[in-house]
Length: 390
Ligand SMILES: Cc1cc2nc3c(=O)[nH]c(=O)nc-3n(C[C@H](O)[C@H](O)[C@H](O)COP(=O)(O)OP(=O)(O)OC[C@H]3O[C@@H](n4cnc5c(N)ncnc54)[C@H](O)[C@@H]3O)c2cc1C
Image (tube, rainbow, N blue to C red; front, side, top):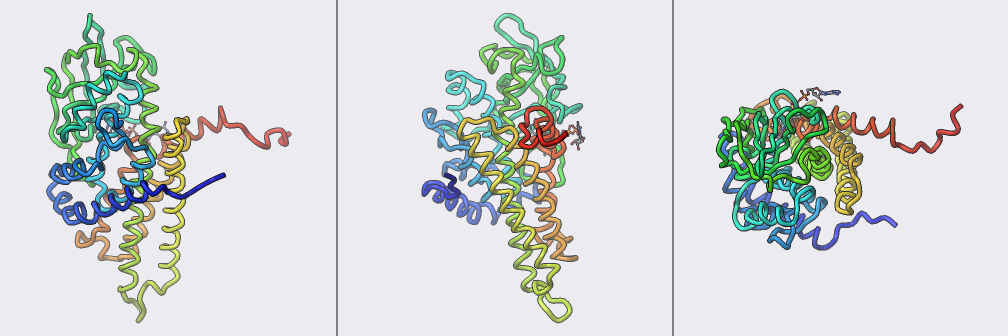
């Protein structure tokens, strides 16, 4: 038995997010893209309407939604503005290691305050010298009595400049690769934490991205997630839960690009005809529809698996790579349909083009997703026809 329909609650949620996107995000999208200002007012409204912190459990005052529900919201808001949505979704990324590796007490202590008022929790594995190779991280952790002392730098920390908490990963001194990586929650006002200036970016300008430096930062051991040295699987499981949402981001962006391209193609004339009448244009639009539908199904499947408590590592990488690579292609084709006007800052398609690139990079590049999938194919995949090969 298989069912592709959303529940009534999910349909309502999708509609609510769509209305929020149209009424609260689209009118201010340009402004934030131009100013690079952090969209706190928009996030406050999203928080008030229960569209933030979606995966925070109900027993601590959160919305208690699933990964699929989050994808439904994110597709709508990312269609309106990918950058604002990156800011909106980042609390889920920051909270996920605590929900996966934390105790009940830690979930309560760290996440409950974030359900009472608009506050931020960021996430950091990446460093100036590494991003893809998480096992190669170099920031250190030293256990001394009832404290863990952190040193090193974390790079590209989304919402790092506004967050009160940071879920991060450092390695116990003297350890190598996966062994020794330790998840820890850092209050951002701890002595020795230094936050850099916002990093200038080509897109997602409404999201805050900074470097964070740890200089002898003393954190109580009660902030360690799971056992010291056993944090690597927590980071990987976090990505398996958050990558479907990046698939949803890319679906939203690609859908918006397609809709803008349809509207433009119907009114732009060339060779005494609307360009929508040309088969070359029609096929580009049809390809967008084909790939957006496929990306959404892959995304929903990966999200559903996460919600079922299944290991969705592979489906998360499949949907993330497909949706983000195709998101980039869709917006590039949409811009092509706009011709020269697409290359100006007068039309939103130019902004979407800049925003789309990030999906192929953050939360694991498209190459890293393929590495995850290929490793699975070459080690654990169970071939159907193996015995028929001589
Ligand atoms: C705007 C923005 C926000 C971000 N937010 C966060 C955040 O909140 N928290 C966080 O921790 N990180 C964040 N990141 C970091 C992001 O996850 C990394 O940039 C990403 O994982 C890639 O790492 P890197 O930039 O170091 O590239 P590298 O790892 O140096 O890779 C460079 C290139 O080499 C390729 N490559 C690397 N290894 C292989 C391989 N084995 N085989 C084939 N190709 C390979 C990569 O695919 C890429 O194309 C953010 C990044 C950006 C740009």
